[in-house]
Image 1 (cartoon, rainbow, N blue to C red):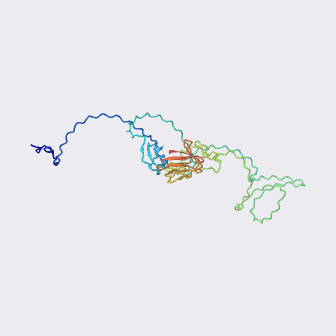
Image 2 (image 1 turned 180 degrees about the vertical axis):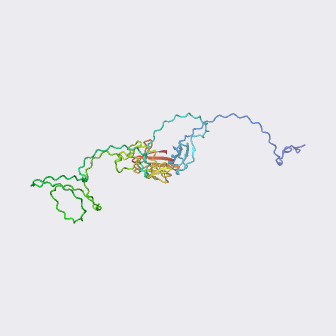
Image 3 (image 1 turned 90 degrees about the horizontal axis):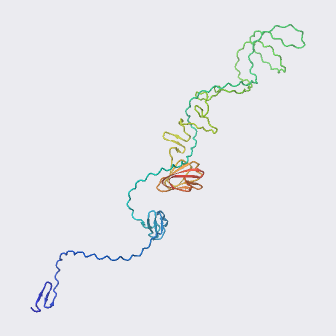
Length: 431
């Protein structure tokens, strides 16, 4: 064949030495993927790179507990504050007051799993007994009972006292006794010579029987009193007693009182105006068995056993099966005085408890007396302040610390007045 002969293979047509490309045919279908060849050998590890420069250390702008962060609320943007009680770091997002970022743990890894509980240690020795608390103030003496107590047993009769010595003779004559019987008249003697001196009047003859009473004559005028007493004639025989006249309507004069003789020792049974003491004639005074209790020189009842007394109720008090109460309230409870705003204690709060929810309580001077007590209950979930008023000393119990105190949520404190304007406060939740 010549140069014009045709040569043909699988990909092109040759005419002599001159090659003419034909049009490209459509792509054939993709053949299946061949198997992955074996991995090549691992190359050698390159050498370590040079160490980088150390980063700058970080120090927060301020450090403190979380509650102290508010003091920096007005700081500039990017100001940092580390709260040491929570190990949390905060940044100011802007200069706006209080615009803080969310906290991020700082210098503290995640909390590890709780370890197993260790074996219980041996019990420590019992601590010494605390000192005796302050003696409570003795309550005031109640008023006298208005209910009579039961009558005590009758004591034995006392012995009869000795008869007193006879009084001295009276210096005033007693009334004249009745006239004795007339004696027999003696015989008449011989007549003597006429005397120049009047002799004594002879004895009166025997009196005849008394005649009937004549009509009463008119009473003559009273003559002048004689200045010479005549001799007493012989008493005649007393006539029969006449009928008793009507009682006089005019009281006669009282005769003079005789001198009182010295009083002798008189037995109780000889006294008049005796007090009623049951069936006893007399009882000794004292504090022993069967004695009548006698007040001392200060008008006080001496120490006696009062365990048998019943129904003794002081004034301004009540006694029931459930409770005993006096003027400020029950002796077995502490009355409440509930307050919902700032409150200043008053004298009527003595013996009560103040239930406060907000505003706190103030203790002022010249309100309470020594021994007065008031309890305070913080009936809220926030702190309440017990304020020491002007000219008041409010001392924390067991210390020399004075001033206003803070009562934690639901805490209880008791205030005791120990002298004018001086108080001691104690309780739970008190700082």
